Length: 222
Image (cartoon, rainbow, N blue to C red; front, top):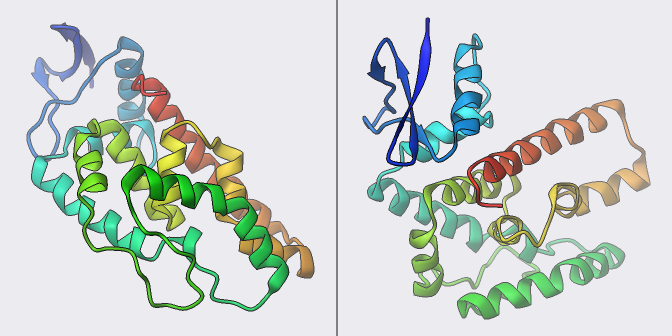
């Protein structure tokens, strides 16, 4: 099957058999750069492209977003924030708690100040994060669809809106993001040893993070 790129008013549309390719919500599959459009065509031509974090599928997710979709996803992001990985210390190991407090303390403080949230470290499963926060909600809805997609995808795989926020703000890079998400996990592995499957899991997760980062770069957000 043949595909072509047609530029219309500084945007690049993907066509197949002289017809625009559409998302499930009937929005056009388009990009802001020819490079991005070419990547999409290469990935479309691949058989069984089921990787949710491919440039193609991240772009399709982004282009398919409606306002209602963003509202519903924002609710999911608030639920993740209510149980954010960065905030919880529901274990008794003092060395691990000290390490997490050191690495997460400034992030929690800065995020709290940015959105006027009273975030506190939790030692149990009762959270104190507000269900609604207009500052954070307004920021979410103001995000362009590409960064909104990246934030949601990162938060979903890391269980942390806070770390994902600083990632798309360019304050955290890929390898550091992986280390921060795996602080508790890595601490246990230092005690009990590193297995081959652990390395494979780390490599897989890092590739996902790197692909989301590449998506942000391609869409001119980084």
